[in-house]
Image (cartoon, rainbow, N blue to C red; front, side):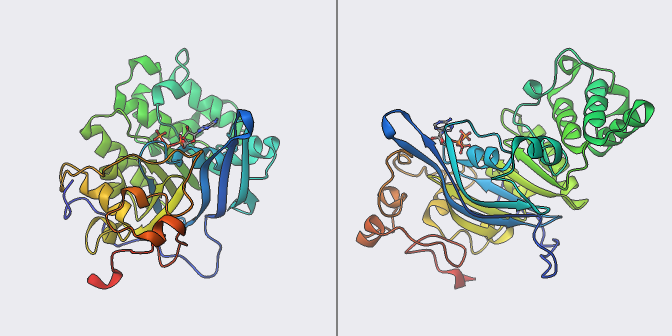
Length: 333
Ligand SMILES: Nc1ncnc2c1ncn2[C@@H]1O[C@H](COP(=O)(O)OP(=O)(O)OP(=O)(O)O)[C@@H](O)[C@H]1O
């Protein structure tokens, strides 16, 4: 990845004032209750919107809360989780929906999940075609040939070759397994796709291929929340980037401004980019804090080259796209 290469051009669907966003998340917090009365603040006060025809990449180091946030949206949190805030799509409040609503109207129908590990997601003993048709029957109510045709349509939209529908998952290459998993996510025609680390473990060619295929779904009008620590994949796919650190979103920016000029405003986001081999290849010193023992002020302060006493004692509010007392100036361009 270079600064000038794969950033998406600014030909994006713009939000409309007339309709609500496809996904609107406000004040989302997830805490895990632990033995001994301890708590882990995995996600704190996260907020963002996502429009149809747009991709928002949620990026950050391992353990910063990305997957927990995704699980909250799908109602897949474990029993020791407590949530606060709202997350709304198509008039449905995801955080308080009961399991029946999530199973009948949300998963697969409103939100299609593109999984991290297609091999683990696909049933090993059934052909791809059989799995797609079964999912079509469950999500659409179609039967017989109609379900098979619907399944074939989803496969086609995911660029999965019709001639391979009779294959078992172990007979597929990594790329085709990823397309099969994407096809499963598309069977219910969900307007919102949630891809959780879809490129983990793939070689670079396959990363680019997967990113481009996800982007095609966005260009066809779906919204995509792409959860990834792969900044190259984010650059290739996203219209906007949200950066998470220690459970908080610390910056949201247009992808072309984030990856190009003027660059990120939050020092952590800047550090993430500078750590890339294609850039300065300079790691951020230190480690993220324990989510069960977060500091009073900015969680990044102990690692931050711009921090001062205020950062250590006062948590910065999220304003003008970033949560930082000393952001890079926005008007450098
Ligand atoms: N059931 C649970 N109980 C307690 N803590 C949990 C539970 N599930 C996740 N966590 C904690 O929540 C934090 C955020 O985890 P999460 O998996 O969302 O991070 P991530 O950013 O997606 O990282 P990765 O890319 O490695 O998956 C981690 O510290 C994790 O240990």
